[in-house]
Length: 226
Ligand SMILES: NC(=O)c1ccc[n+]([C@@H]2O[C@H](COP(=O)([O-])OP(=O)(O)OC[C@H]3O[C@@H](n4cnc5c(N)ncnc54)[C@H](OP(=O)(O)O)[C@@H]3O)[C@@H](O)[C@H]2O)c1
Image 1: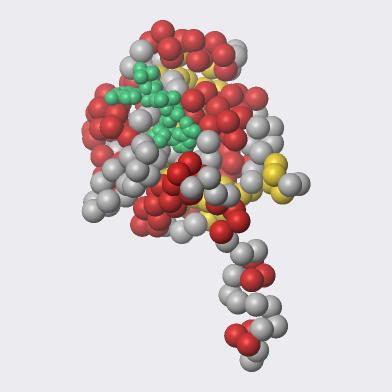
Image 2: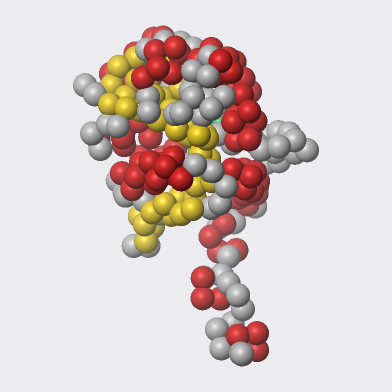
């Protein structure tokens, strides 16, 4: 697959490393060409650095991996409003979260994923990879207590969901369909809430949820009887 990475930070590096290992071709773009070239070198011979426009033209899949405040400028630079990403799978891994407060940056507006979809005319936006730290995405594979990590995806296009599912599988993770793009805001809120638990409360976010067999009540309990 041909994958473009917009952004030269931790997420572009972590996911790009995994996808290069899996045999995909990559083009990396960032606002600092030296950083883009350095990341492309780290990713190996299947990767090269390019301008925003070259990256937009290259990838069947485009990973948007920049800080939330930089998203409008980056989408403008790639020509997203003019349809430069039309028909592409656009992965949104961003977390529009206020550092320290762990609230959403724009709590009363639509999700960041929906706003990206509005700006990227004709692109198939999939929200994914926002729930875990970049270091988790570097693990080969991310396996905790013997259980592979599940990765929820929200998006509307069936083929795009299938493409991103295969990129999730490349990491040794399990894709989980979380519904349409209208549910992406729930993923963004989940990230904000979990970060608050991890960082402010020092709590294990996994411990706040029951296992699946208890999700609808106690198995065999009062609510489980016909
Ligand atoms: N790191 C994580 O563990 C993690 C996990 C899940 C989701 N995310 C989300 O993934 C996205 C990328 O995170 P990251 O950790 O890769 O961030 P990062 O290491 O700080 O890199 C951010 C990237 O965004 C670029 N950028 C920042 N402001 C910009 C602007 N105004 N215009 C254009 N580009 C700009 C940076 O360019 P320069 O290098 O030139 O500054 C850099 O390429 C964020 O939205 C974050 O919320 C991060």
